[in-house]
Length: 97
Image 1 (cartoon, rainbow, N blue to C red):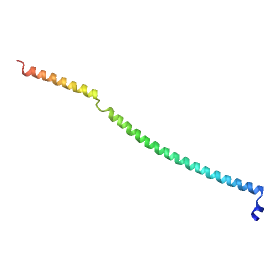
Image 2 (cartoon, helix red, strand yellow):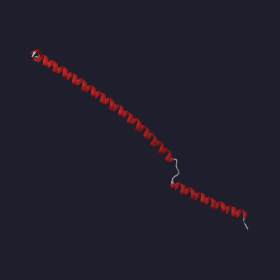
Image 3 (cartoon, rainbow, N blue to C red):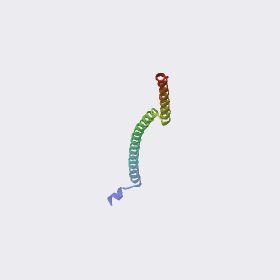
Image 4 (cartoon, rainbow, N blue to C red):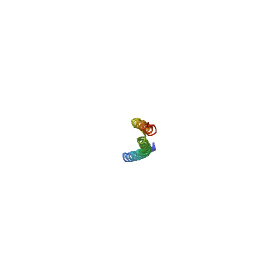
């Protein structure tokens, strides 16, 4: 009973305001912690994506240096034609008669 006598509208208001301030502080801390965790995760993800993009770019660069099928066919035809001409020249030079 003694505790009820101590409560007044003013003390109840003060108590509720203290509780609200404490809850507000806790929620603000949780929000701050969550935001920091999200920021760290985002930074980590960005670093990972940067690494993946760098790898992708190096593959594209490497791929651009490969010989394409059409270039290989054209080159092989050119080589075959060159060998054919070389054989004709050799035949003409050594077997004129």
